[in-house]
Length: 226
Image 1 (cartoon, one colour):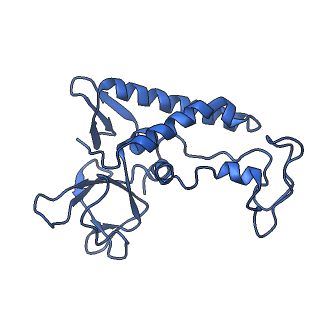
Image 2 (cartoon, rainbow, N blue to C red):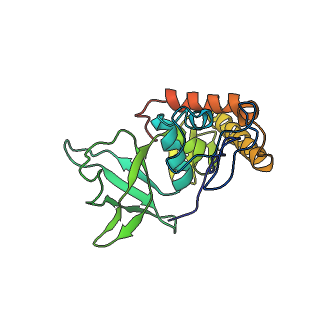
Image 3 (tube, helix red, strand yellow):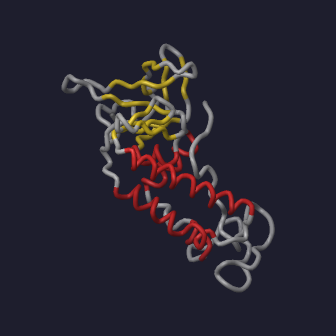
């Protein structure tokens, strides 16, 4: 458990669609009346609102960024072992801001992993039995954390960026300033969408979203922490 964090906590529904179990769609962004209500089987595969809403559904990096937005600060640091074949060391930050060891629960699909594609894991649940465990967890990268995680702090002299004092990354100060500006703009776009749901998000935030996608898609998957 823990507080949520980061930009992009909600995904606004596209206009003209049908939400939940009720009602017809109104006048949609695709022109004319909105699509007919979806039945129990859901939308047809060629429904334009459905296709637009799911245009990035196969982008695993974006999906993991959304996981960060929903699960942060549930974060585990992965430190590779110094001995060949040994499992990595896993640590997390407690509510008292101390760093403690943690393990992957035997019921997790990641239990037998000896190497991870990235140096960070986000998780949904932490339990304590014979030890402290996480069950459902996924690797995430620095950009996913810096764009959708906690508050970014820039250490100009050290040339590092940090999130809530636990996760630290090597990066020039100008990178940190740019990432903070991107997050502030994204928060404004989402706030405007909440206040004016009829507004086309692709017009007000399209270039910003594309810039974020480009950052996520071009980041090396093995980017390492400090």
